[in-house]
Length: 381
Image (cartoon, helix red, strand yellow):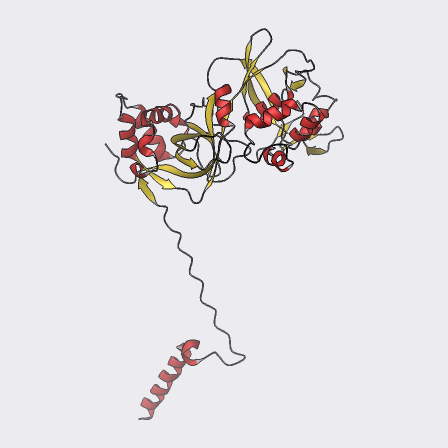
């Protein structure tokens, strides 16, 4: 009997030792306190994927044109599944009406990026230029300076004669520099406001006084952030609230050429340098290294999107007067830019010349964005 009682006592002590504070209250003072339970991680919802036919405006797009533009550029994609579909798309021999839509709907689904953002647009301008300066063509198109050093992380600097490294000068510093290497011979001379817009677009065509056509291609920038001038001009009362389009800004700068326009342009500290080549008639190249298909290419933030990927744009509610009410179309991610930051942010390439520039200057729409991702599972037909 004593053995049974002893065993029962041990069992009771053992159960008491294993009891939780919630069953018997907190441990007495001086005893180790229990660790709080680890918080459970919040489950991350799976991105919603839908058939392409359910995209807003899908039925109204020119799917064959979109498919042709993607086939011509999809080789830049580094995503294995997309690269495999690129090979299959390029192997399609019959590209008659409806084939593009059938291929896209068979092999892709759409995945919504969270939230809303902004759609803007850009173009390749064509501007007059001169080989020598005059009172009208007074802004030098500068080549990349010999002392400009660009680091891998996007930093840009120069080394002073005493060996100290310093950030490269901002726009005002570059424009007012008199000593070498910024005093190297300019490549051409332009109207100041048109050079300013050429630097924003990143490339364009210059028509010289002897009718030669030269491509102005991006060579480097000074490492300073891009700052738009539309909002400051609106806030100063220089432009109407709903009329901060590209053509409105350029017209004001031209009408106020001189110190007033220089002050506004210098609000943007970024300065772009160029190189000139004969115009070959081809569209400009994007950051992915390929010519940009008109109306079917966007500049994106490469931190969120890969080059060669397909994106569906659903943009409406324009902020600027005279704009098209909406843009719904399939495009390829082929470029980037200093002002393109964030996941739901895109800059639509609209082509070359004045008409494209007029349209691009009015695009500032609320954007919803879908990525096209390869269908999971076995390949389609």
